[in-house]
Image 1 (cartoon, rainbow, N blue to C red):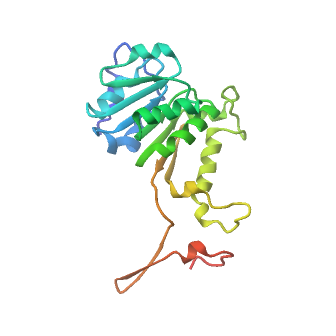
Image 2 (tube, rainbow, N blue to C red):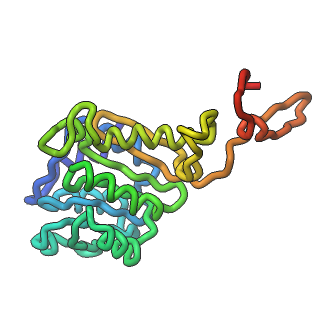
Image 3 (tube, rainbow, N blue to C red):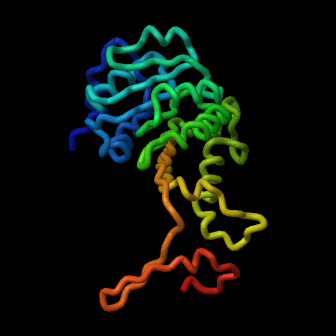
Length: 235
């Protein structure tokens, strides 16, 4: 099947773009339903500006495209119809300004500094400002395994934080309230997807999960299982 991203790499201009080869096959799977949409998009990390025309072509002229970087020289890379904001992705005040000026977003892509504190701080402050159904994507999470990026196997990292998010997403089902209490993120996270070097978290605000039973076409709903403790059966 045609792949916009692979095709784009063969027709780039003088702006360099740097992507892992396998990302070009992940993007259509993860973002294909957003192609051509009039959405609000934020990418953290501009570098040489090579991804700006790529995303502009993918989403189309109706999209609100915002690009952020810590390097003031990146202002000169703005394309017509795009917005470039300069600031530190680990600075909560800068992140608040991004949201105030351009949010809420449908898609956020963190391809910025790749260090643990940068990635976690950006997620914590920006994820709540995704629209329902919006996706937060963190690229190059292999840096979680590199000490030079404050990572390392078994150390605090964004991969480790994403695993923590998996537990929070399932905290509805706690049977050990003292050591694993319910967390409000359970109401916000609908999906967490792990790819090689990419983590994608979907914001889907929702209430307590409900069990359904049906007999003779009569559907009943119950949340009793969610409120029980010391469970011995799933029924």
